[in-house]
Length: 250
Image (tube, rainbow, N blue to C red; front, side, top):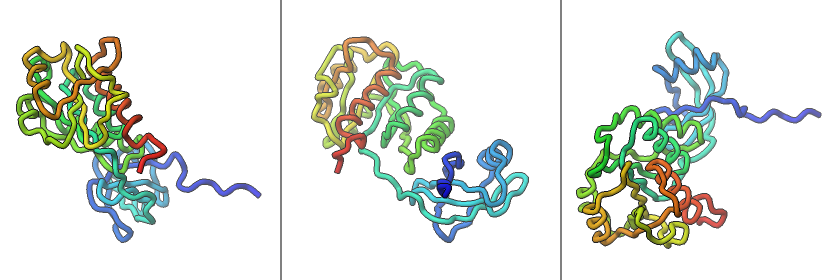
């Protein structure tokens, strides 16, 4: 007897919809998402979709109506609830476009809860296009299966970040001059990682960081890492030690 095919198929398109979803809803998909479904995926009536709304989790839906520029879908059932990601923030100095996009994409895939751009004295890129970064976040969540989008905070200057920093959240400062190995640091959630720009932090910034009560110096190995490499390496190490990669997580 042949096995029953898995449903929905692994090839089912998965999309973020910025509106509440539920068992009684019949959302309309338009804009770039509709273009993708209609012209790239060739979606037709009855085809399955996976949708998530950053509010209630993930839902299985099917195409009910397909027009030239929009689709109406029928929600069938919830497939997963809204996830709870580890309470880890990534505070990073913006870098050039392609490398910044890479930080956003990979940090989202790794499960970061909040992305905080930080403007330092040596930051080359002080203005970030929020819409582009939000699009990177959505695309990464669609690809990796997240049901909750990370929060994208507005850029803030380093002194302001330190002044308003919550005392109950450890700020793990990736210091090129050395520190405790991150893998051995006892810094469970709530926590944050701070990585610097191309060229690193200035001496004045290092002194301000080391004077802040919540800051802990960490090291990321014996080699000099690019800014984007340091950010993603640090998130990966923390997730392995304290995040939801562990089998014994609560």
